[in-house]
Every structure is written in structure tokens, then in C-alpha cells.
Length: 439
Image (cartoon, rainbow, N blue to C red):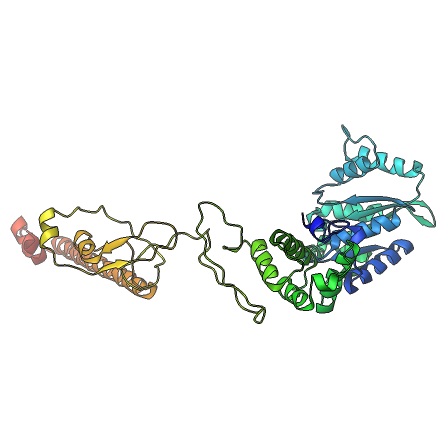
């Protein structure tokens, strides 16, 4: 719809890596030249690092386009190659060879044999999302680089692109030999302010827009850079969503209000035209062109649990106490009960308003209320005091038991050391006044 509305030849701001819309920003263009130089010399392994949306896939597609006429290029994207066997299966599949019913050694020999008989003397492996590769697969790729057709020609060349997590994985001691083969590290950075401007104008010009500067005015491009922080993929998404919203509104250009609305739709903010039935939405604060730095205000997230009213303003406790069954009040007690203050909570989640009578609940509940509203320090102090009381009681019981044992031993020793008349049960009990008290 927006393509016809703005008279574009093709959709600008493609959602997938588009080689025809490649803009040579400083970091990605520097990485492209470095990778081509390393692949031409065949001196080692070049690496590309960048977070999500920085243009790693677009860079590898550019290399594929440049090298496809001189060598066989195998582009491996989002492949979870956890073992050398899966690696060779994927390589044979790219060479249109059979890869079923063979073990790892047979697959390796078949791949090398096909490479020896291939018309193209070189094969370039472009691996995207390299952080998903297994350690054994990385070692197999390193060993493959040493396979030469002849003394002066390196048959297999390799480029790995991944996130910064992949760079951290390479520090493992088991990958020390792989690290020694790395000859170049390229880092893709975010767009600077002027690069975001140039990227937007370039994409519009490539799509056939005759006046890109008027379609996206300078203040709009500045807002786009501030919202997206210069991440290339997010810049494309926001510009494409702004064009769609402007076409639906029948506007001839993109203004700040359109950009803010498009950003709210991308971020799934309530009140931005992306309402979902059954969910609560709140109106978004409007941002004027004079104040583009205003903060968008919105209510609670949909994933949050509904607020449960409490009896006081005390913060929500860390632990919950089981709620005893509620005892219904009799009609007589309800009639004679004086009027009490009822707390009414605002209906913020499309749920009925709860009115709680604090006095009624206080009479029907035991000491254990619905929530333990004591602070953690008080609960910990009470728990320690209770444990101390139990230890004191155990100490008293043990003291009494030891006293009884000592007196029994004394009676036994006296009866063995001298002749005395046989003590009667009454005499023995007389030695234990505490037993008489218990009796």
C-alpha cells in the first residue's frame, strides 16, 4: 500500500539482508575490505563480531556476491553444526552430492574427493551465527584449511561471523590452536548520527524517491536515530513502520507524531493501534514536535499479575501465610456492627472493584492474616527468639535428667561401700523431691 502511495519502485528498508540496498557505512565497509583482502591472500581465518541487527548477514551476502564468479561459495546461516559429521553433510548438500548413510570419515573423504575433482579450485565457507557451532566443528574447520590442492593454492577459505558471545567462547583453552589461525577481527558498530541520516536518504533514493529529504525531514531523522540508538535493523523497521502508518493516514510526509506512533507499535506499547482484545490498554502520552524527548507513559504490563489489595500501606511481603477459611458473619452481628471504613481500590485491570471491610475481616480471621505484613528483620528476630526459647527448655530438661542420674549413682555406691539396711521405696523417693512434686 505505501509503495503506491509514495510512488516507490521497490520497497525501501528491507526486512531481510538486501545487497541492492547496501549502504557503505564506515564499520561495515572497513570490514568488507579487510575480509576481501584476507580471502585473496588466503593467510588465515577472519572473524566478524557484532550484536543482533548490526549487519553481519548483509556483509556475508556482499562477500558472496563478489566471490561467486571466482570460487564456489557456501553460505551457512543458522546451522547448528554441533559435530563434524553434520558439517560435512551440509557441505556435500551444497555441492549437490549424496550425504546419507555414511559415517564421519566416509563423509570427509567424499567431500575431499569432490573438492579435488571440482572445476572451481577454491571453496569459500561463509558461516553466519558462528556462536552456535560446536567446539569439535570449529576444530574440524581449522584442520580443513590445511588441505591444499597443490603447493601454492589454498583450496578452502573460511569466514566466521557471530556475536560477542562467540568471541568469548574462543578464549577456551581447547581452542588455542584455532585462535592462532585468526588473522583479522572485524567489529560492526552502530550508526553514528550522520550515518543514520545517510542510510535513510540512501534507501529512499534507491527505492525511487525523488525528494527523500522532504519525505523524512532532518528533525524526524534525528528522532529516529535517538529512538533506535543507531542499530541498523531497528532503523529499517522503524522507517518502514512509519511509512506504513503515514500511508494509512493519507500523509504526504513522515512527521514526528507518525514516528512516535510507529515506535509505539514496534515496542508493543498500549494505545498505539495494536490493541489486543481482552487486554487492558492505557492511552499513551502524546509527544509534541517541540518536545521530542518526552517520556511515553503507560500502565502496568499485561504480563504482571493483578494487584491484590492489602490492609495497609505496607509493601508486599516476601512470604505468604496460608489463609484460614473465612467464617461467615451472622445477620445479627452484621446489623449491630458499627459502620467501618471501607477501602476501595481503583479498577486498573478490567476486574471488579474489591471492597474489604477491615473490621469484619479482623473479627473473622485468626492471628494468621492473609499476608504476613511484618518486615523481614522482625520475622527473623522472632524466629531466632523462638529457637532460643526451645533450646533453653531442652537445657532444663537435660539438667533434670543428669541430676537424677547422679543421685542414682550415689545411692548405688553407698549401698556397695557399707552395710546399711535395705532402703524402702519411700526412702528412695525421699531423695528426689522433684519427683514428689511431679507426683
